[in-house]
Image (cartoon, rainbow, N blue to C red):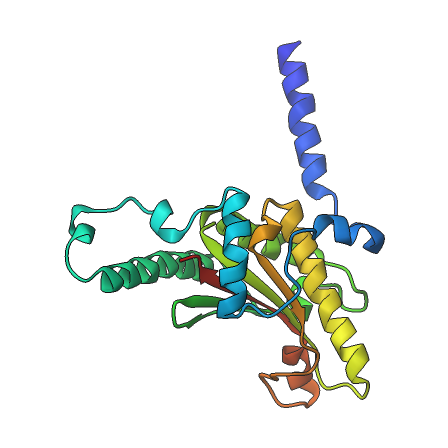
Length: 226
């Protein structure tokens, strides 16, 4: 009997793992994203959000890392900077080692880490829905973000050049929000999140056939909580 029940349990897990992810109804997104900030992740925005982050149980990098005896001596600012750099370097390495796939890249920007997700690597080709590959990719990102949780996250959507600037912003915000909803469903707190749709701003490639594919993207910028 025990073997029979174990077999059923394993079968259920296998079936659950094969079920395709589908975003919840748009009308419910505000419930998932309550607590997120719909603004750029500027220094002042991070400062304003920090009490909310801490109120939800979040910890700063210095509160997360066990302090060594050496950290008590020398220049306090230099020691803290080294601590942030070390923490974010570990995060960068974890993302880089995990996301070696087409359409995904990991970059360093000072103490921040930037993950670039080309739209076709995370969404269906002809539908505004996260694809099976996107589910896999975002699941791995969520797992790492859960581990390195002393961080703020900016989720920014971008499009290629479009005639209608308002449509471009709406399209880019849809992508950003869709990714944010996915992350909240996979254990990432909205108290860490900044969500923006930047339309066709900041292209990273030419606006030709191939460049347009690269410019349609979601960028996840990760910043240490100080």
